[in-house]
Image (cartoon, rainbow over all chains, first blue to last red; front, side, top):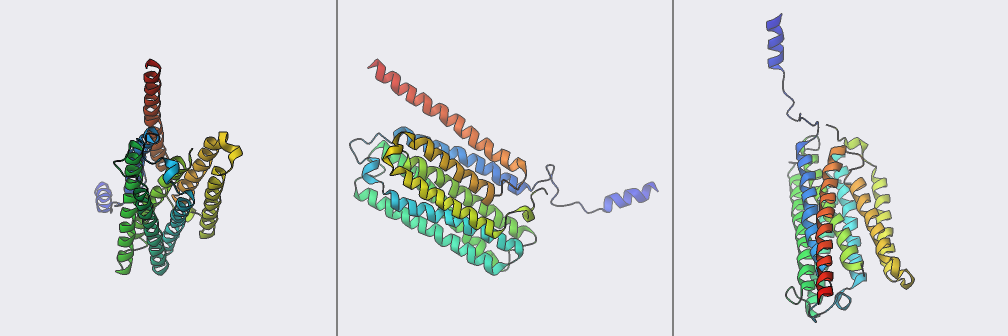
Length: 205
Length: 103
């Protein structure tokens, strides 16, 4: 009797996804990473708040900002969060065609945002504001530049998911949906950071 | 696992949330151009920013529906950032005022 019990216990397959918390470790790590990113962007936003009025006789915020244009960019990034969450819903249903459509839409919206930022930077430089002009210029370009870099990394991740789906390597019933969810979390985080930057950097008087 | 995709909102609900976010963004921009709100602009914009921030986190990032542990990890980062940089900003501003008073 005792031997039979031992045999039964040792032959039982361990659950490869079982964790102490009962939660997915990759997702937990992603949330810890996003928490640490709050500190990263917090530092850059704080630096900008400190230096936003130190213009060294260079252009001021009022001289360079184009609020209607940046509002459209913000709207584009907000809509990209919608398309991203629709991509996740698609793979959770096992609909790869819709997944690829929404992933491509998100990538294109992200690319539009980057193009808008590139245009904005060019305009600012033409108006005399560069990263070396003043503490305001330095803090502005470093903050928005790092955010733009995050968006660019997000676009690469989205295109990677698109390619994996095209190659049939995203299984909706196992790790495939989880991968899209992690990329989605990163993308939404980039969006909420922009929500803060848009209000604090562009709209605050 | 505690995080279940079947708890997540429907696609139509996501569209409604996105519409709401778009309206709040439009209101934010409109508020900037209303001169009579000049004294209240920072609190109004801050409130709108927080509403948008938490709407995206709650619905698009599923924090409202997933395990509370994820929420705590994220809030810990936000609260740490606010505490640390709040002290930094206060210290620098205070130091500037002291320097101004001394000169």
